Length: 571
Ligand code: HEM
Image (cartoon, rainbow, N blue to C red):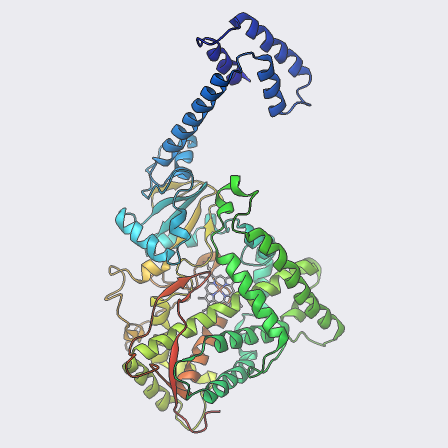
């Protein structure tokens, strides 16, 4: 009110003004008095109208002039925000911060929207790495996604500081994740008792070494089915294994989670339906939603993410609830799959039905694509480097021999193959930006710079894994770097060494890392033991390694290969 008063007063002094200042002041005072008694009833806009209607200065010229002044003021403010290193969101913080602090370098991007183009790019990890290099900000870079302040590091020490810090144990709010119920599952549940309970239940009943061992038979059965399907198509030039591997991975998760077994050879309506739901969810969650960062856009849903989520969720609910009620109808002495486990919970651990749906849906969702994407990258590298593939074959011949199929127990002795998997994780981490970012719960200090609460933090694992200061010849495919020398330590990729932590680290580290790695290594051992993977034709010696970052970073164009069976008893 005070500002409005001042504003009108200032106008009154303009040459067009006809009404004396005293009369306007009187009008305003009257309005002030009457508005005091009705303060609770009047909203700001009606008050504004009341004020303006009292004012005879509302000429066209004055209105145009006031609009111009307001627009210029807005523009000046946004240019001021935008001029701050890191862009507009950091500029706003600069005005409100209470502490003197070193500024974090970073790109300004565009006024209002900041560096949206960095993240909406299909190669965001590469763009961020290049921008950090340009700004000399590899340790810590700031940028803005609309109103969201973001920090990103391309340095292993700073990555450790972020991922291990309890301050960054939360996830930023994403409308699509909330709409798709992931806030009630592990991935997006706010850090707290509920999240801890879910992680404990999943660690005990899905990801424990005992549980992983129990699901060995199911992985062997599915591996045999993959081999059988591939053997049938082995004469095809340019065979594309992507869909088969994705369906195999989905079948594997459906077996662990829902206790459902399907033949890979035949199309099943239930599997196709779930594949469709997962694909749609994957697309929605992997898209940068502008309304997450520009609240003034949220009414409009310009990318149709909200409406697509709204139509997906009832389908997921119907699908998963059907499976839950089938389980309720069957009485088991002991839980045989993860649905049984969740239904058997009692006391404080007991989950409501909507929460059970969210947890089950997340497991299927997270466990399917990550595994399939990694397997395709490994096969691509094998086609591209036949010399390395033949070393893997030699190892398989020595340890397993051609007379039998690989067993999961052989994998521990396949040291070169394990090194190949690690080298592919280094060059093609499925989550180059660690999939889901972290959120600062309180103000904190990272690498000596102040980071305010509410800042989103990301680790560019792809940049760390490609950094020549961290890895020798980082662009070379050299599995030998992971072959443990006599008496040396084995390099762990499970989150203890930030030079390569493709499963993240700290409190929010991937809980499915052992299950994922066991599945990938065993299936890859089988696929390489049974087949030689060759370029589709002799004149096409190269493999297209272009990437496309959705939620995971997959090959932009599916791998096409030619297969040669290595064992006569390949099925
Ligand atoms: C090759 C396989 C996989 C890769 C590369 C991978 C990678 C990741 C990464 C980078 C994160 C974020 C970690 C962080 O913020 O520090 C994550 C989180 C997660 N992953 Fe995985 N993952 C894989 C397999 C799986 C599997 C098989 C499952 C379950 C069946 C799974 C379930 C989850 C869940 C639930 C989270 C969220 C954890 C939390 O927020 O507390 N992942 N994964």
